[in-house]
Image 1 (cartoon, rainbow, N blue to C red):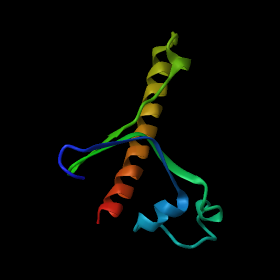
Image 2 (cartoon, helix red, strand yellow):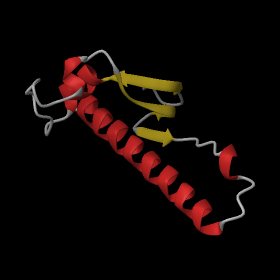
Image 3 (tube, rainbow, N blue to C red):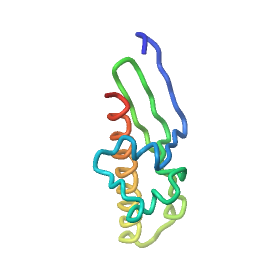
Length: 103
């Protein structure tokens, strides 16, 4: 991008096929990969992807209204941990996709 230009993508989504083109470790055997049976299905998404000359920012936003009033602290912690793990998985996928595109 030219200096000073910023691109913000909201709700960036990519298909299984697009991801497979970039994922070096993906098994190309359509018989064992569930996603390859319908490659146009959404593989992943990113809430906000911000591009700025030489830098990329990935932002995941999680909404958890079902635990705001949670009384049981252990259940609350498990819910937060699960949401965090899911967010990390999403970020890793988008990072590998971006790294491939950047090559």
